[in-house]
Image (tube, rainbow, N blue to C red; front, side):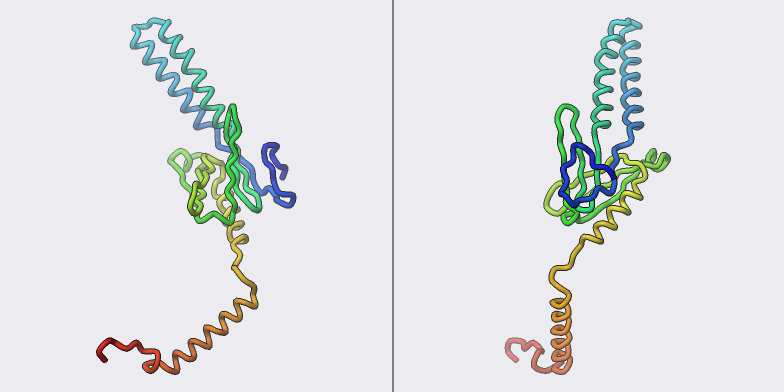
Length: 191
């Protein structure tokens, strides 16, 4: 998978998924709100076209701006981190390392359930997480992300160290089982 031009990755970091928010809900909301404002302005002015023109002159660029803000958002999942790029006049990239992720969740509204999109929330310990808002096929992205999280959750220490810990715990358990009710029983004050 090709690396987006705004993304700077480590030499051996691999892009697993890229995407962005679905634009349809934003366009629909922007056009609907502009038309409602225009209708209210026209009715409120008694059919005067000047107020309607003013509302459209302000409303259409605001609608276009809101759509442009969504179009400029991009999401990337690599084998090491999740990225969210946003910004129209400036660039903002938020990176969350996979090792810092504590929890992921999927949220779908009514329209998301009907039309196959949803939002993935990525939570991290002690800081801000990121969200992949209104993405298509969120279950597939969430599955990919959770599989990577399982792969990148290393146990501290070596196998030999864990075997030594296990053996020591077994030895302690044997000692406790032999002395149960004896030396290891806690004495109460006054006994």
